[in-house]
Image (cartoon, rainbow, N blue to C red):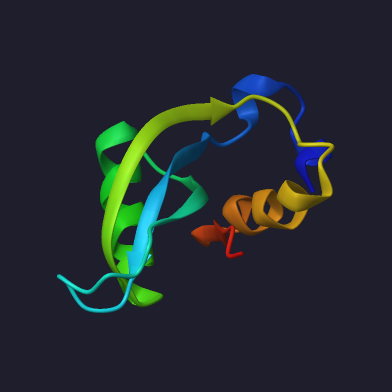
Length: 99
């Protein structure tokens, strides 16, 4: 899908946010799990807000977002391929690394 864009200037901005999130109710002892969130947004502030809303919608009670960046090209890693496509389609893709 990304190949439809003639050059990088035409491609939408896809952010990746790295962090940790905790399931369950606030104050319960569940351990935080690593998460990656891929999404399109107008700017970093909007990306963070959308990421937190998506985590809440998936049942996470708390989150610590550690790093934000922009994905400059379609990923080769199978873990991120579908998430990237979902982000291009306007979805917020959450990858949770549960043990």
